[in-house]
Length: 207
Image 1: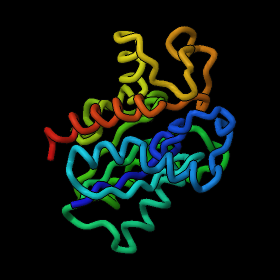
Image 2: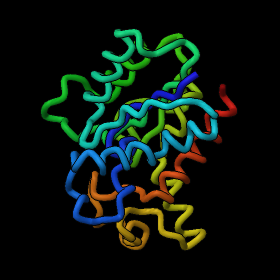
Image 3: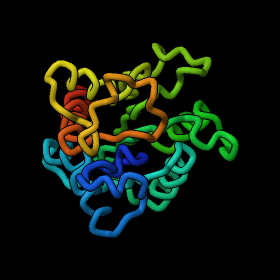
């Protein structure tokens, strides 16, 4: 069994580094990229599952790109039936003018590709179907909290414990979140570990 994960910067591990000069660099020096990959939530979930992991998250990705990588990975036979696949969905309108499919079509295509595999979906920082005509109550249980996202978990944790969970020491997300825009913030190391615990707790009851 392996853990195989797909997503954008929230899976790739942007924000693990402490130097703010990398904030606007989705593809920094290899050292920083490896630092992100090896310390993002997939690493900590795989530790709890006691298995290997492959983190296929890429900074800057929208859901169309995630679908493309998922399709290539499945069709090339890289995913085994005993693997666990987690897709952390990105902001659904990031590349709206260029996307071929809308968010509902992307989800249905992912479902076709992952049929027969153990797989789960999470929203990163924006509910995928908020503006769509989708009855989220009818989605399968392996789409975890479709009306919410893992950033909600971080906000609640930070408010309750008064401990920073955001990159570069930011504490503004819960003080004045209206001034934050899509892609403007990411978890720090502590935040990714909290996300990992949340993901593990959610999937362990379903596998």
